Image (cartoon, rainbow, N blue to C red; front, side):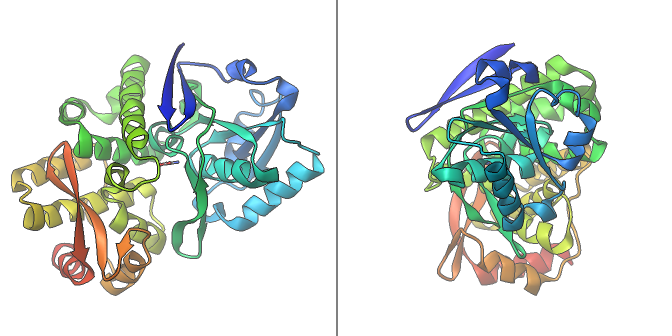
Length: 343
Ligand code: GLY
């Protein structure tokens, strides 16, 4: 077990790697802990969670909505949970987003931590303090920014992770490499997904690098005014595709990254040979590189994006692999590219 403490604004966040969920005892007594989790984790890991009070909700992105938050809050009230309790989200990104949101609004704020159980949550969703829910087809439109107290990495939860969820998580790892770390990019080029699935040391090293990279960016810009916007590489188009076509977040981000690479070629001088490398890496990790889409529908959602600035979209482009840049791009330019590259 190794603990790294990261600092964001005036908050300290412990990341406990190669840990066991039983080490929650270092943060609170079992009877002060309330686990929030989804129906799948609650049933597969019933034994591991039996020491705690557990509130579970139906698994799936479709349940990342205000109604789920209301149901959880009613259960917390029925359990007479007060401000001394510790909420722990055990699960993937939906669970961590909902837990952070509930913890930031229940009785005006409770302490909370995460035990992420998917690759995506380990390297991305559990880190950064953004939390919240979707409304209609609009992703993450309601929420707060509040940092967890700790993130505890218990890799035994990965034993039940479906293959498609491993693939899903690697989209964010590829994204991190593309925006900030050419060495990480080269290292994942040299491996296959199966290498990481079979070798816990290799995986743990990869996860720790990605955690450090994300914390470094968030620490510079917690409120997402500049540097942190780079983490949205692939997400402007990705979010719109994800909710329209009900595909996995990682698949949608992978397609969004390909669109962003092509836009980067024409707008920021990004080299075609680097687009080819990124497309190859996305395929190597079994992610899609394109989808047939209804461009008008996607553009409507892009216009609702939080990164909109008047008629322009604050879009993340690449200057080179490992170096991202923000450009204001007219919506019509994005439309033209979508028609060109997705038909
Ligand atoms: N919770 C994910 C983030 O803050 O980026």
